[in-house]
Length: 119
Image (cartoon, rainbow, N blue to C red; front, side, top):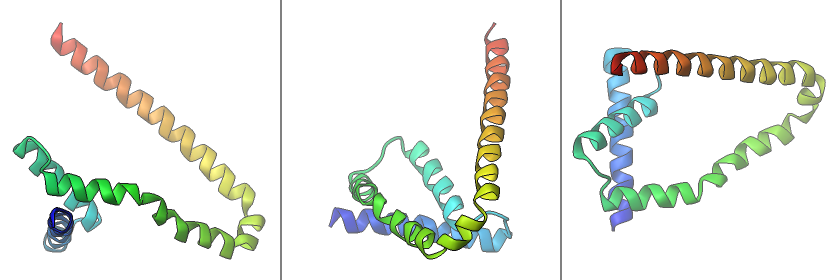
């Protein structure tokens, strides 16, 4: 019963996120807004309730099943991947490098910002 209640709570926050995106015409997906709303609720509440903990732990335990459709898609489009391997690999490497550099710069900036305020 706790799992069903926790799962219903997760679906409720996803629905709230979808409604918020539609009403405010936000350029973000509904589930992302729902997760932010859930995070804010948990911050205010101060802890994760047992039903939510049980549902999320169970779902995370089966997370690997979500990669099956991606693997099937890779097998289905093997010829396209073989033909465009250089462009895909280049995009992955360049995107990863951009992410690493931007993360390092943001971390450096915020570290200086917060250490300057504490001095």
